[in-house]
Each structure stands twice: as structure tokens, then as C-alpha cells.
Image (cartoon, rainbow, N blue to C red; front, top):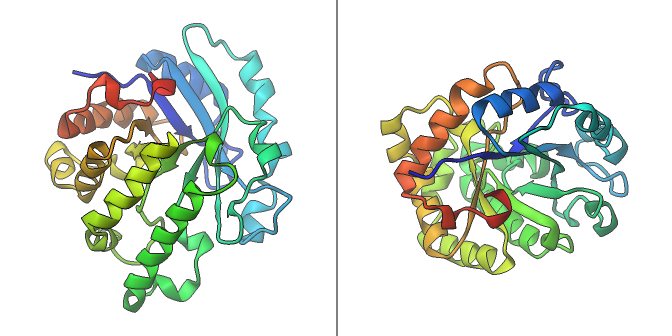
Length: 269
């Protein structure tokens, strides 16, 4: 069975929503013990060149703030593991992605979610009566991300259609997402060479039976049929229990989707 030996979605204390002791050096040590060969730090980011949609959360999370991790990575013991400096850039309805092309080149990779709707969409869309509008917003965001000026720098679509901080069960939105819409978007994703992220953080409490029945399985199988490649990400915000769930849940997803090495984006192998 395929063994996942990478993680390209890790948050350190530089993300305001992460634990204050989520240090890069500790993730590196734990990742090596877990047998990972490649990891990527992807703290939340908004380019200072663009006006913030959430001023309090994003103003500090600019390039200068995130780049301080470089020294920590440089001084860490990286024997046996490759460590990458990336970011989780935010979707911007105005710009596609809230990062300039010039700034994107300063990162080893970027990942972008279409599902941080608690930050980016009109507040009323999060109400149960606006589910169709909520889903339409994510569909439009996905398309705009794929066609943004920085699409060539995007490694993966982070936790696609998994609406974060949704005030109701976000599985309702996934069930509303039609096969035809997914085929259209995932075919375009494959053509762009962008991977689809299998986000372990959103399913770390699932057991094997729950994973097999999860709405994500339908979505990922369609992405696979459309020729998409995958990357895995823990979406870890806390280093302490990172090793308890990541590899076991990766194994469950590999089994549920019958993934082979060729299904993984080459950059992540």
C-alpha cells in the first residue's frame, strides 16, 4: 500500500489561529520520527499590497512576518528531510488570490482555499437560508483561484469545498455540489497542474468506516477520474498530537481511494 511521506499544510505560531508553541523546529523533529521525507510550512498569508478583508486577522500575516521562519528552518536539524517555505494564501474576490506575482515567487509553494468563507464571503450567506448562495460563492472562488495570475505557483487547492467555521453542517454543501460541477472544476484543475489537497485535519476524528462514507470520498474520486493529482496536508495548528493522527488517517484515505504513487503530485513524492 502507498505510504504518504509528505505534509504540505502545516501552521506554526506565525498563524494567529495556531498554538503559540507550534514551532517549526519541533514539527521538523516530529516529522522525521514519523518517517516523513518532505514537509511544507503554510502559514496564513495576505499580501500587504492588497486591502485586507479581515484586517484584525490578516494585517500582521504578511511576507515579513512569515519569512522569519527561514532562520528557524536554517538552524534546524534537517538531516533526512526536505523542508519548504510556503504559505496558505487567501482567496480574494477582487484579485483571485491575495498575493502578487512578485511576492508569490518568494515562496517555495502556495496553497489556496476556496472554503475560508467565514473570512471572504458576505456574512448573510452563512445562514441556512442561503446555502445555495454559499455553495455558489465557493464554486466561483474555486474558478477564480484557478484563473488567477499566480495559478502557476499554486501547489494545491486547500481543503476544497470544506467550508471552515460553517454555522451548520458543511456536509450539506458538499452534498449539494453536483457531479457535473465537480467534473468541470477538477478537469480545469488537472489541466493547470494544480493538485487537490486531501486535508487530514478535517477528518482526524473520523474512524475508518466514517471515512469510507464521507462526502469527501465522492469528491476525491471524481477529481481522480478527471486526472487530478493529490497532496496530503495535516492542517496542523498544534505540534503536540500531530503524530497521533496524521499517518493513521493518511493510510485510511489511501485505502478508501485506492491511491497509487502515480496519483500523488510528483513534487510531493
